[in-house]
Image (cartoon, rainbow over all chains, first blue to last red):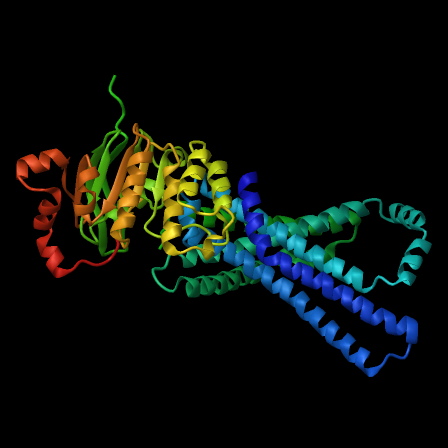
Length: 268
Length: 245
């Protein structure tokens, strides 16, 4: 599994590393363009101002590009890597289908995290004025943490729960893409089109089921659970409610995709 | 002690959709240490049979046993498969592929692969996407033949290549396969490979037409396997087969 994951990450990052570099470099350019006029001249020339606006636009476009490219690479690695010609290589390895899919899923999760981290780092570069560091150093962090522990002792648990929630949500979203592609692969022709149709159908069905269930049992709706939460323990339960729901989705999608890859595989 | 047959198929059937019967209740047993030609016109079920043996397809009914086991992790570890198309990720370099095979196949002989690639002057640091189709096919063949597999499954390895390349491919197979294992080689170009075959399996419309040794066919029929094939499939050849079942 580790070997598969290493191979998968190599394939995924091959397409993403250049845009990661570009985002960080453009963030640095923006940082320099916005810093010098303000600190040295204050009244920037028109040319510098235009350059700064262009640089900021490029940065925003690149950030959107990272998100879109991450999604494209994840879809492409599953489709080409398992359902395309490369599938002949992967499915003849002495491994189980779930291991192949699991490595793709873990790889997709890691690059999603990495893209998020790169995005956050680029924002840090953009706002990294010396004043900010001075302000950060001036804050009495020990007191803040102490107060936080006094007011809500379990706040670190919220952070863990939020992180877990984001992880499970990423898995569920990726697995919805996988199961849609696997279902599309069952068609004889126009497999990509069918994968898109399946994605729309499944998303609609999930929304419909959620609506029906919450209409029948209103107390099960996420908002209702949130509104009823009055204690800290209740708020923790709201997170676990969300984690459990997306975990259930993930398990269903994983088993469905694995069934198709194991029992219904038909590479062209 | 009787050794388990390497391949044992019982009533093997594969149906695509409701209408296309690619394999129809096929019974077949292959023993070890043989070079077997899987012969038949287009659409006779050769590729389907090979994909079923590889575990790339699931049978509609019937059983497959390879070294006594159903297709799965173990059987994949003893099968070396050469598909009828380029199946390597083209972003990789030859060296990456060697690492990949060494990582996943315990029977892969890295030194053998390196010396074969060196003899063919194929650079290790070149990306596959920059190679010609002929070179890619050679890389594929080298990697598949650098394994000490029990069963080599080769789907149309000599189709669409010039006579010199055919000789190279056949020579590579003959000089590198594990002699305790079996090579199952599908083709409809029998004349070119007849000399290397021990046995032939004739498929027609997904059914087993004949499974015999090359010597037996020559002796009983009084003609070459190529000639015998042409006579058996004369009607289909004239009609022109299609499809890749």
